[in-house]
Amino acid sequence: MNSYIVRGGTPLRGEVTISGSKNAALGVIAAAMVLDVPSRIENIPQVADAEIQLEICESIGAIVHRESPGTVTIDPRPIRTSHIETDKVRNIRASYYLLGVMLGKFGEGSIKMPGGCDLGTRPIDQHIKGFEALGATVTIEHGMIRLSSAQKLHGEHLFLDQGSVGATINIMLAAVRIEGTTIIENAGKEPHIVDVANFLNTMGANIRGAGTDVIRITGTPVLHGDGMYSIIPDQIEAGTFMIAAVLTRGDITVRNIIPHHMEPLSVKLVEMGAHTESGDDWMRVWTDDNAELSAAHFKTMRYPGFPTDLQPQTTVLLATATGTSRMHEDVFDNRFQYVDDLKMMGARVLVADRFAIIEGPCPLTGAHIRAHDLRAGAAMVLAGLYARGETRIDDSQIVERGYEDFIKKLTALGADIREVE
Image (cartoon, rainbow, N blue to C red; front, side, top):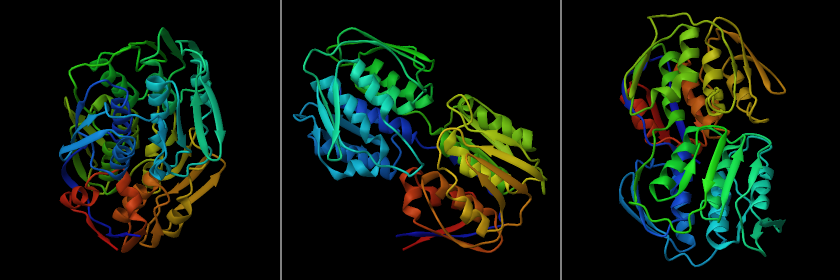
């Protein structure tokens, strides 16, 4: 177990370059397994989750060459099994993308139940619904998900009960090589879904409509495009630093971003009293000296709504705003676990079901707390950067699952933070 030691009270100022999207990288790495040729993928973030996904691919025979930080070449041709037995799949949720890959490539597959952060109920029923519509038989026994197909798989028209990101990507990965046209209605529209689709199209797939709620996939038996692709910037990392700028009453320019992806956050920050300006691939966020922030109401939603992965960081920010704020978590049912730790630091937060009521401003003070999950851990770091005195955050390795060089980037902006064993 590692811990962060943070001393707060310093406004963060300067520039930070955002890494590749963790969520997109996990999907694109899996998508590389369905190809007939090697692919070279750039801008992969150097985070634990991406490395675990690569190691899972290696466990079934793929050859992964780590050319340089952020760049890998993946050769799926040596893969000879559709059964994934490594326990590493329990470490990350996105390991289940390989089920769609195996179904599309071999017509069968099996994997242990995926892991990931404890955010409450995270069913895979929409994944199963999609696989079964394509002609697969799905069984779950002894902790394993098994797919089989007695008959030839085929494209199908299906409607997701909710716009699940994971199910949308998984069905897309399975359908990309299956004969016929698959239409996914009420599909997820998140940027990393679009990135996976763009990668596959670069490799010869025929996917249309990614980024809308209707995606059409025409199966292509052979996928061998030009083999090079670069991952999009990480929307959540960018948002975390934007919130840090406002929280510490600082001035940060985030670079290597897609400003359009940040609008659900930037609009609300301006509503609270912050300032923003942007260019083609950057955005500056700042507050006036000793600015008093206004309370605000947030509701997490599927893209293009406010992202659930920025909910904990934003709740910390709301604790420093004047007035009564509301946070409605409408994606996951167990994402307020960190609130007790935030209250230990002096926050006034009342949680009822999926709602949090925050009374501010709160004079937060340092405390000994922990990272309950990836984004909650990042939120606790932000709380420590604002709080008076020293904050110790245990289980800091959880944060490093999704943030590349987090301490280095924060330190360059003026933060007083270090990691200890």
